[in-house]
Length: 319
Image (cartoon, rainbow, N blue to C red; front, side, top):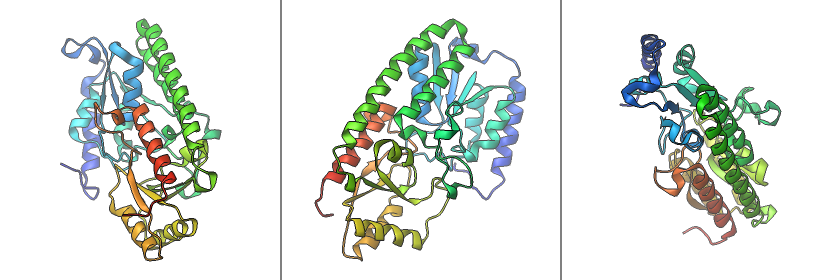
């Protein structure tokens, strides 16, 4: 059952987290149920994917947030707290992405190792938009070359936790980093297919700024970096003016954001005499269904890039 942001549920969840962590104490969680693997929990799918690739058969990873879940607004349930409390190690993004889970993660940090996979990224290369109140943009996974630092962070944490598996983790990380480097080069090539003047990416919320910087796209989002911010009528009209003025053929909704947020922009542009298409949904803060190509980080990136490039190259009017 969803937790109401207006209730005292977050306080109760934080108290439950403290009680569960204290009860676990120094017990060996990794051997619970006869499973000798390292028990890892990851907040978002992109991180769970890294842990699975690097950890291999030595690690059991459980992700908290599945397809279509918005991590900006996600509040841990009592079941999540129990899952976190049973972990040997917890991986999360950091940079305030999981802001609503902050109290719970803080409670866990005292007894269970918690790792923010973005901590090793040089702050000088992070984006810090002024409207985000001095904090950094957390959506670093949209620059594949930056997200490679998260792989290194996971490898180091697992090797420190399970020294016997250090060579395995190193080999798995190297193999995955090679794939990610190839993916980064592929994205660069595909981006170049779109003429520079048409590389304008309009989305429901401002999650793609690292993508824009890395691959040469101008990015405009209706909502702010965090979906906790609300878009007003003025935001809709301003974005519609940009679309009409630049004749941007397609705009995009995201799987974790309601369609109505970008449909309002389409309607405002239509009233000005130009109607952009709403392209196929992009994966922003969550990946696709498990077992699907988009249920992996590499598959998610490929889907997004193919969708963006193909839609922006297609100048057909909206149907």
